[in-house]
Amino acid sequence: MAATAYSVALLGGARLPAATGAPRSASALLPRRNLHPLRLQDAPRPSLLRVKAASDDTSASGDEIIEDLKGKWEAIEDKPTFLLYSGGAVVALWLTTVVVGAINSVPLLPKLLELVGLGYTGWFVYRYLLFKESRKELATDIEGLKKKIAGTE
Image 1 (cartoon, rainbow, N blue to C red):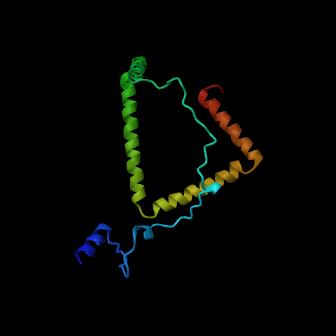
Image 2: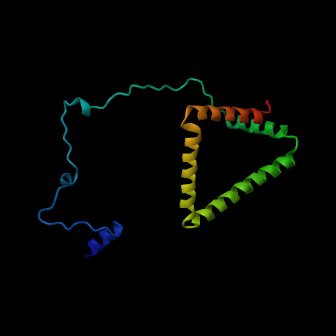
C-alpha cells in the first residue's frame, strides 16, 4: 500500500496499471522496431550542405565596445536632454506593459481585440495586396513616406 501511494505521489496523481500475471521484462515495455541491417532508407544520410566557419574573427572585444560607447557619449551635445528622453522611453515602455497587462486581464477584451486585428488584416490584404494596381499604389505610398521622412521631398 505504501509503495502504491508513493508511486501515485511521484507520478502526480497518475496511477499505473496493476501488474497481473507474470512479471514483464524491461524489453517488453519498449516499442519494437523493425531493424533490417541492409535497408538503405534506415541508414544515416550525410549532409549535402557543408558549412565552414570563416577564418577571420569579426566579433568585437569588450574594450572596443566600451571605447565605442564612450566616443558616442562624448559626441552627444545635450546630455541632460538625452537622459530625459531615455528615461521617458523606459517609463513609457513600462507603462505600456502595465496597460497591456490590464487589458489582457479583462475576460472578453483580448478576444475582441484579436477579432478586430483579424478584420483589419483582412481589409488590408483586400485593399492593398490582392490586386496588382493596389500593390503599385501601396509601393508609391511607401516610397513617398520614405522621402518625407528622409526630407528629400
